[in-house]
View (cartoon, rainbow, N blue to C red):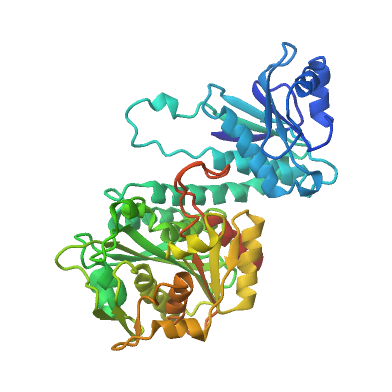
Length: 498
């Protein structure tokens, strides 16, 4: 789908999207269209329940005096709350309305209210971002009725008084959208396609963007002492991998990097602690953290971020064959600490333990952030609206929370503490890999903290937000959401680029 910015115009073909704030009146371009259509919009308002609330759309067949085929009057909500994310959701809603219904073109002629936080070139760029994110599809495996699913919308025009400023603002956003799409593709792929090897292979394309990609196999990881990660994958016929992506964009090459670590369990059967049939469905997405890290590196490189960033993802399959890890096994991690594995379905933390240790010892990062679809308990606590945030550093935690709010992917910080840590005591090893039936997300984070030295660290449990069943959100129209790419990109842009 092509996105372009044009001077203010009402002469576009296809659908024409106009805006009206909640409780307000027609103004600006919407009022002009109503005049040209001899009051058609006002008449439609008079016989509808449209009031300008967020998400409302009033669709009208365009009068003959306009080149447009239809008019979409979209609700902007309360003027003082019409910020960048509201603009993106507005555009996504309008684009979704005509995405696959036969329209080939859509023009946004949306005027922000005077009180709105988002206006001008910023409004135009965020409208474009909303439409772009809504345009994602994953139809590659459909062989029947493809026409029902393929988009017809080919071009979106954004009307703005400052075309060049809008283009500049959107260029970086467009690169981030590419990273989000890369992550969504990974999460949506079936597990018979996306093995650890295939995931690693796809990251090799980053070299075209200037990213150095290194892939370690099982022999190299064994030499490093990564017994925790390797134990998870030993029941699979597919070899485990560790992918390390280096983006060196800082002006000073010696600037310590930000390290991003992702859990990449390409399929999680639970191992010998086998999941139920229903619980196993969707476990192709248990690499959502690794997907977010890879998508972020893609985004940073594509927009030439002025930062040094390491992305490291541990890629495994957790399968139950005759060589699979057993409950009661004890493994030795790269840190030298031993772990009693009481439940083989608490495997993601074992993968992360070794990757966390690796990036700290190899790269001496200024901070480490890991992302993982780690626990079902986080969904009990936070549902599907917030990711769980845990950290040993208040400043880093606040940076992440601020970035998450600004891109509409919120987090909620949960506690860490000695009382929770004691729940991991093992009778025969340095620790066990589960803490019992209570506070499961917290004890999982406490486990990870045992593999963090004095480096500022944050853990994001994204089990509730990495994919979605049922009704999809405006900006995430597929099962895989690509959650985290925008958060990490904003975090680095706001705090670590120089």
